Image (cartoon, rainbow, N blue to C red; front, side, top):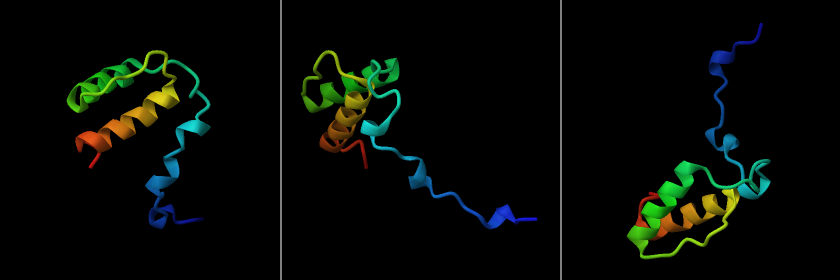
Length: 71
């Protein structure tokens, strides 16, 4: 029998590029839209209409960097 207690999952293995998401072309989630609005307000930036879920994720990453929230 294999001892799985010593096998640790790499947390980075679960992170996928938004361009590779199966659902990336869908509309953003309500949580993404809300967080984008908050970040945009803090960064004095605009969020374009019609973003996909993947595009919203990328914009969140950009705005987190600008606002210092992504640290």
